[in-house]
Image (tube, rainbow, N blue to C red):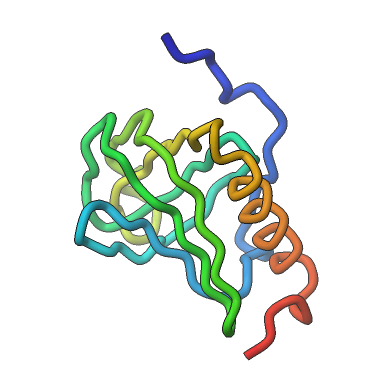
Length: 124
């Protein structure tokens, strides 16, 4: 049984604070561009893509900024329709990062949160 983590500390994004670079969700041999990154922590993330990904699917969250590439491996904890009043009306989902890959998770968290605040972290 998974512990509830949605009430833990997370880095939340708003319309004025977007990370530089590109964020993707890889599921098997399919790649989805992340439309919105709603929050992130070293334990997981909430994001939106244009497809519904089944709960318990194994995924990779990949961040690319210039030559820098960071990844975190995870499992879809939940997935549901985006609020239809919001732009895009895709699918919002929670990704629980694998705890045995904590150094990768922390590296992804650090570069995304730093890139959302300081644009000079991203070298093209």
